[in-house]
Image (cartoon, rainbow, N blue to C red; front, side, top):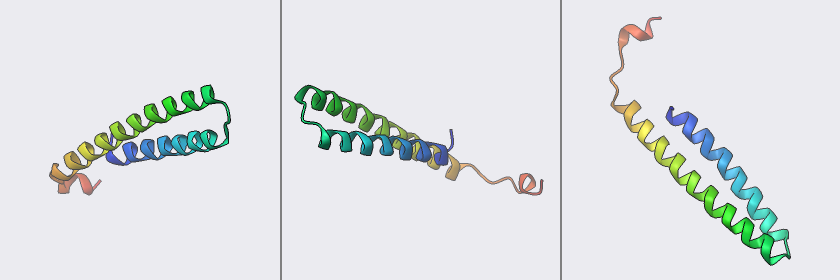
Length: 73
């Protein structure tokens, strides 16, 4: 997976985080609030993992030498 793909996935996850946060603000039900908080924690972990993947991919892409013959295609 490329760094760009990982960053796109992280953006999607951040949108999910924002939606869950908005639901949390709206709820008055303590049980629902706990469920949303658990969801927020899980999605936050997924965001962190995706950002780490993006970082590793970017480092790998930066370390990969550019083949001038490949650019001529």
